[in-house]
Length: 256
Image (cartoon, rainbow, N blue to C red; front, side, top):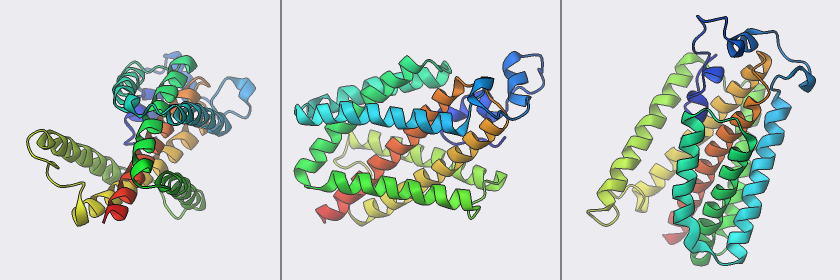
């Protein structure tokens, strides 16, 4: 199976096909088993992932709405730190426990609610635009993938993975530079910021395609049902990234 540049799914040997030499491993046997035809088989299905992703997004929406209504925008930064820690634990420990993943969604909702409130206070209506943009991009990429107009080949995967790693390294450099000079390298401001924002949105969109492909192939090859939660978590990570990038780009456009 091809890999995804999504760090959550990339870390999982179940979704990357790693360790195939040891076929005596129960997880590997499940991975190589015939495709699942029912949830009762104990194997992950695409429907599982869709339902669990929807649940995680609903949890994030509720906690985000509460954060907004109660004017708790100041919790955005602490929630971002807690969310990052939870995400790293889930990724590196290969956590498939629903409670931990739902907790991540709840914390991420607080972060998104706080950030969205701050942006909307300066640019009224921007959050609705960002939500619609995220939904639209997701629908378009899913349609392109399902129609076969975008094919996930090894070359395509390498390109997206390499670009994603390079982008995040560049953003880290920009973040560090921001501690010494206002605006860092200027990658998030003005015309350059618009270009970087468009690139980031395109990159996040392509990551969604890799995620769709990985989940579909995982379901076809019968990975254990509990990994439906892990896959949903991975998709949510990409969707959050996409939403934040669209929100940031809209703020630059409206600021100009």
